[in-house]
Length: 293
Image (cartoon, rainbow, N blue to C red):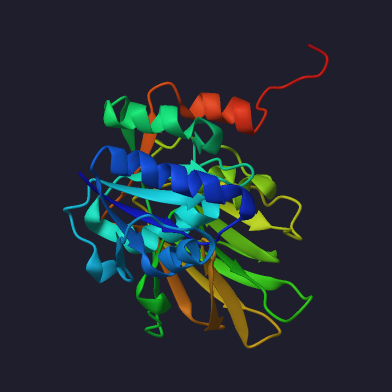
């Protein structure tokens, strides 16, 4: 077996779990390849017992990898997709942060979880992506995809922006707001949720439009089929606005047409058999909790 490992940060309380994961994989004679900067962080803080191979870019990965371990929180998983891309390598999220809604493996249960993975006691959850293109040819640093959401928002101003929106070339509305979130089902539990959007099951074939602080009282979140193409043109007092693909933010000139559609490939997430979306929702979002009961 061959696996890749990626992390963004090295926290004091995560060091022991990183070492534990490496030891567990070494015991099983797994070929381990670690992202270069993360390997340097580990070597700086830990006495690594062996030399590990490393990768530093997407082009250095291929379909020979069986799993891709993401160590951190949900933000680390969102960065992991920039490496995995369309290779189909299942991502295993190990949560060493706080909530970790996507990173479902708890660091305290690492040994048990790794054993279950090697015993094939897991399923692979396929997650749709959003693809973004811009009429001015901007390439979004060579990766124009988002797992959670694409958000357009104001920049360097307290004034609202106007988001002129079309669905399949038909005019929908002009959002007068701080911005607009276009969310996948996976991202419905993230930024969109904090702005009043509904929760969608990961298998839902839909995208979600959630305005950010709209000034129109009758503007509400709107669910659309994921085979629709969405077109956005932003106007406002400033000359530029922000376009965020998950945690990656770009500055785009106003009046640029931003087209958002479903990507041609999905991201695969490893889900242990006893963990389901509904269980995670109740456990981590306290869904349905009522202090009266």
